[in-house]
Amino acid sequence: MRTKPITWLEISSSAIRHNIRQFQKVLTNKTELMAVVKSNAYGHGMVEVARIAQKAGVKWLGTVNLDEALELRQAGIKTRILVFSYFHPDKLVEAVKKNITLTVYNYSAAREISLIAKKLHQTAKVHFKVDTGTSRLGARPEHALDLVKKINSLPNIQIEGIFSHLADSENPNQKFTNQQIDAFKKLITKLEEQGIYILIKHIACSAATLLNKRSYFNLVRIGISLYGLWSVEKDGSHVRKLYKQFSLRPALSWYTTIIQVKELPVGTFIGYGCTYRTLKRTKLAIIPVGYWEGFDRRLSNCGEVLIQGQRCPVRGRICMNLTMVEVTHLKNVKAGELVTLIGQDGQEMISAEDIAEKIDTINYEVIARINPLLPRLFT
Image (tube, rainbow, N blue to C red; front, top):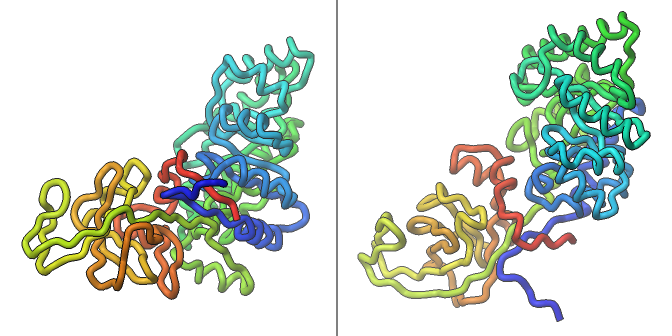
């Protein structure tokens, strides 16, 4: 008999499938969808999300590094995989053998891939990354033309794709995004004038896919919205004006259980630094999550959890593995009761956006920093 975990996440497979279908309806038949599963699928569980996407007909998966891509292959994932960022040279043989597509933006890396592929008597497919304005990885457009031509001359390597990354795609004002798209298109035109035709072209992320059809080429990369969260705004109301039937369903819920309940007299300090002192007789519940588990320390004295369908405030500083919440207003509360950190309990709900607003960050960080060692139960 399986023991129920004390702290766990529940991931809704149906919500992820729903979100995939929503984007598939938006896209034209000429544009494929890539599911971005990097960083443990934004905290959701990379391998299981990849399996869901594969079954839903998604043609591409995106990972941040080669180790993630190899883990997917080890788990039996057959879908095409693009590694966005970095890879260790010692693992290039595995990458080529297992049909993993790597990103290149300089000649030395491309040459190394070419040499490995030649030894293996295979052709390695790569995507070339252009920096059109984010100033992260990628070759600047003014250097890209000569670099692509140089890489193209290498044996056993094919530049199958070309892509860039948008810096301001969430902004309703798409001026900078359009400038980046124009720079990308200009480079593609120059390449084609030189007789270099690259099969796959992509620049759109979740936000651009919803806000800017000019960003469509023949592949779009869906990240945060794959998991039912809005990159554009908290509730997606602007997007729904453009797409009347479009909706997202959050896939992640996060739960724990009370491990102790105690009564405190008036004037009792709670937690490290004595940052909270009781003003009345107070009932306190101790829960076994803290900043190691990913419950952000910035929620100290301002965060909330749900117990018995009611909001319960965090009291004192969040510890490494424990948090104290006030439950004075609850009846018959006891150890072993369910606590909702993210998700719905009755009529009340705490979302990743709610937490992000309290700690002045974005929903991406809230979910991506949940400890990957915590059990993810797919429903």
